[in-house]
Amino acid sequence: MGGSETSPMTNGRMFARILGASLKERRSRVSIAFFSIMIGAAVITALSCVYFDISTKMSRELRAYGANLFIGPKAESAARVLDARDVAEALSLLPPKNLIGASPYLYGVVRLDLGSAVLAGVDFAGLRRLSPYWQVDGRWIVVDFDGRSCMIGKALAKKMELKAGDAVTVTKSETGFHRKLVIKGVVETGQAEDERIFVNLALAGEILGQPGKVNHAMASVVSEGIDIDAVAAGVGARVAAVDARPIRRISYSEGRILEKIKGLMALIALIVLMVTTLCVMTTLIAIVAERTREIGLMKAIGADDRGIAVQFLSEALVISLAGIAAGLVAGFGLAQVLGQAVFGSAISFRAAALPATVVLSLLASVIAVALPLKLAVRVVPAQVLKED
Amino acid sequence: MPELMLETKDLTKRFGKVTPLDRVSMQVEKGEWASIMGPSGSGKTTMLNILSCLDTSTEGQYFLDGTDTSRLTERERVAVRREKIGLIFQQFHLIPYLSALENVMLAQYYHSTIDKREAREGLERVGLGHRIHHLPSQLSGGEQQRVCIARALINEPAIVLADEPTGNLDEANEKIVLDIFKELRQEGRTIVLVTHNPEIARFSDKVVRLHHGRIEEEEQFDEATL
Image (cartoon, rainbow over all chains, first blue to last red; front, top):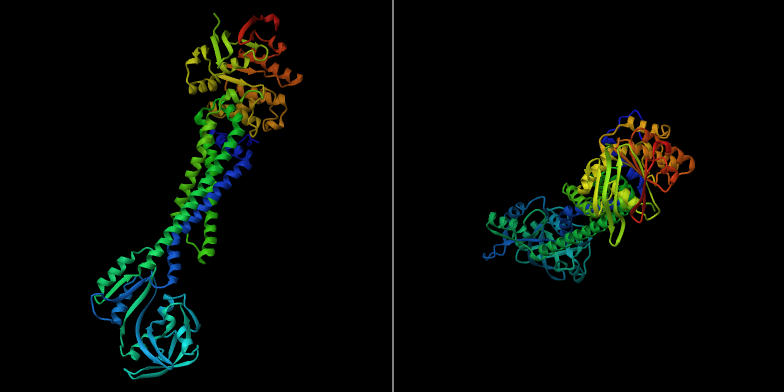
């Protein structure tokens, strides 16, 4: 029904009235178009948010697989050990925000109760962050100055008939070291570490007679936003004694996985956009088919093609903008669901997701509306107003 | 010499091998009421479509108020429809989701500017002052046709073209609509009306009978007939 008789009716208000009444008249079809656009926009928003966040998220996830940066003596130098201060300086040059964990290593052979073993001096706090995948039966050593504790690899523990809580005598005849150490934890890595015994770096220096020395260091660095080659080169240039290099196998795999996942997401977004476009297009074609007589009448009483186009485009624009707005909200929610399900953490809203969603959704709407618009404008009043 | 509102010269329309309108020449003076009659398939609707600029002829000329419409572009024909023609349909053709008042204002909207008071007066004139906020579905056939007439007249068109305006109405509503047409004639409005009904045609000044797309007979009535 019309507005009150006292309210002034302008052409703008009449336009809005026709627009609103027309949308209301076909609310079921309009709802289909609205939800199609909303779902499309929601998926694009969610994938955009994840897309822009995934590098960081995935990079951090992949850091669970261990070190990707090696710091050791210069290749041209004959030295097999480095000064621990040089290594500490090299590690301090790594971007703190990107550094997941790092540990220096000092190796040597020692005698245990039932045979010899490789002893590794490490920074346990750094090692724990560097190798989160290690399975520990017992506890990690948590303090640097603990000179009476060790951790031991599972294979070695089995060979030496040891378990967490036992004591093992470590002997190094060259340095005269002979002390019982308590096994805090038995580690299982599935790698060479399972055959080693681990102590604090300072204790290892004392046992092996190389205080303040390390063989090398390993670091786990998130590569998102930085060029890890440049970082490594920078470290090598700043600390003369060390050579830093990315562990290619890990970095390369990481990059490839990321690219593949991003490509897959782009493909999904493209397919969703195509489905949305087709759905909206068929709905709008149905609306035009339903309205041919109405359009014919409008033309018969004076509407020109432009007037019909403006009317039809305005309706499509209202549906699209409402769908996109709802899709943005729903999409951010969907991103959170995806983030929790895949990464176990929230996905940050990236500003870039907004234009990506709006532009792509509007593009889909424009493509979807082109054919129905053409059909609407081509309605011939003399044909459609004929008696049935 | 009386001034012509419309004149056709050898107006011909062809659809492939079919020729629904074949060299029709007729004239309607300003203020005249002309009825076009004929059996189904005689070319009445084709004729009215061309006269209302909804369609174009294949050959011949059609002058409306001095303008040769056969030379106009589609855009210009739309402007002629908007400015000079008031159309009344047998099927009423109202926008179902707009009220009676809004349906009348729609013609104002496409013509120039909305004037709610004028639109209301237009509906009052056809006896629908109390039904202005009703949707077409809430109106009877006769009332819908009266809304259609109010819409056709709202922009003061030079000519009113009506296609079987009483074709879907009962006797009572037919009389109401006919009375409106008589009023329009008395006001000096030019009317061209397509009808099957000789009872309606007898109120017109002139009857043009079509048969197989050609003018079979043209009959002029005088005042005494009315």
